[in-house]
Image (cartoon, rainbow, N blue to C red; front, top):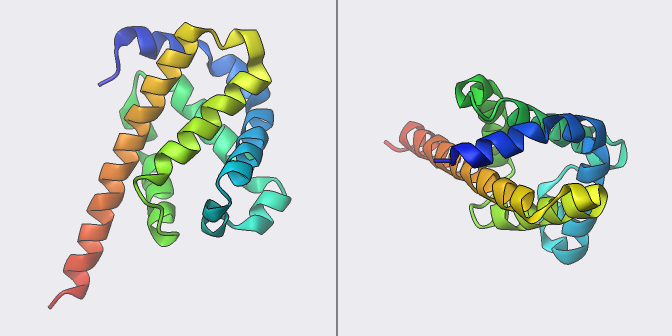
Length: 150
């Protein structure tokens, strides 16, 4: 569970994320692919090249920040992304790679806006969201196994 303080802080960052989201996600992918080239195979590089993947991620981050106090409103987005992650075999341990890259990109792009307090709130918020995805993806894998198993 997220603390109310973190919820409030993350929600307060939604407008700046809407404004700067694409810069942040482009920087995040740059950082992630530079530091962890092994994860590139999980991504549609044509969607990277045409900017559609960074744009989708920027939108998802903004939606999370703006609706962090009503996670039920995010269920359709979580379901869509979790199913895509299962298709591309995203592993639970890869969430930390994305998270550290995202947080670094936020710091790089937003600079002084990302105070220690904001960074702590986003670290908590990212962990909570990754836990949601990891749990949902685990369930999808289990559902697939039960359909395949005799």
